Picture 1 (cartoon, rainbow, N blue to C red):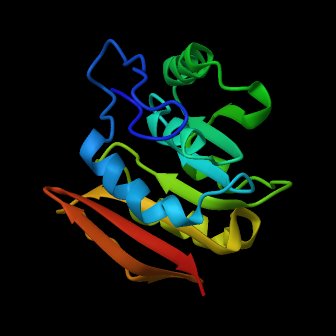
Picture 2 (picture 1 turned 135 degrees about the horizontal axis):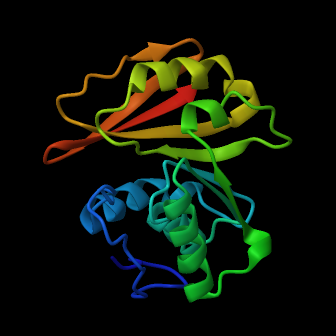
Length: 184
């Protein structure tokens, strides 16, 4: 797995030894960041939920995001993210890592909101439950013009709206979809 563009372009990330983590493909990451690029600046706060290897959040830093929060429920994944950040020598003041299930993390009180939130759980997870929790806490999580992106299998049907978040776009690539939600 490699970083596609930006400051760390072409750098190789460490991958997990097991097959429990399903990393987002290079092609889908490229599609995602072609859409997000106009929204990314040094002021951008990016939240990578179910971060796995950290590839999505690291790609965001590489493309200029000012701060990235990585969240994963696995100790191994959090350690791997830390290894990848160290490998690329990404400054510690640009990142933070939390070991927590995504659905619990979004219910916590946070000092600052994020501009871009990426959610990529194992496909068997309950997306509706997460979206309900996220929507209930959206003002505490997502900036007014922020976006939540959920990566999901094509057979997983996500709702058009949950509370104050509404799907604005769906990008399809093979059997994987990216659903883009914004606050109303």
